[in-house]
Length: 166
Image (cartoon, rainbow, N blue to C red; front, side, top):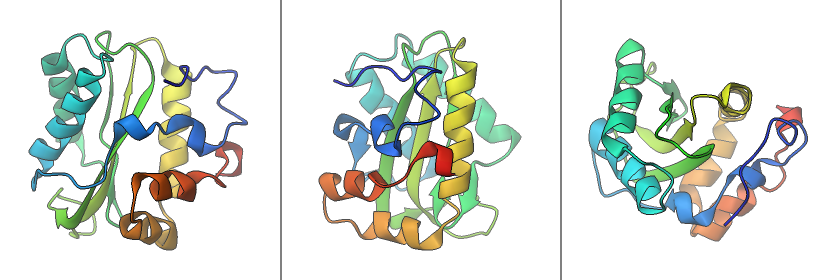
């Protein structure tokens, strides 16, 4: 398992450093917003990274209730910080059929990037969210992720992306 990302590492690492194949669901079974978020949180909990999945789930849904994290291009990145989260985590879920996420462009979401961090990890959490906001505006990049045939291919698409380039 990869080491947690620290503030010091955040500026120069490739995006691939955030991605762990154990935290990727290549085809979500859920077909709705709440179910897909829960599916990703359950995956992270099963890996021992969350001590209280109910509170984390509630935190993510509270954030979603303020404003949808679906940002267009078929992408959403629900997120939360909590003392129940052990380290910065990026979990990725894909749905080739799409999920109604109440997005700003009224389109379905095909890629969900769940960002979870401990309460104290403000800087790396905000840097990762900022990076995702930037890089996921590229429609071709998002299309490549949706079309990827395997988890390894999803990871390799991120290989060339550097956080400080976003």
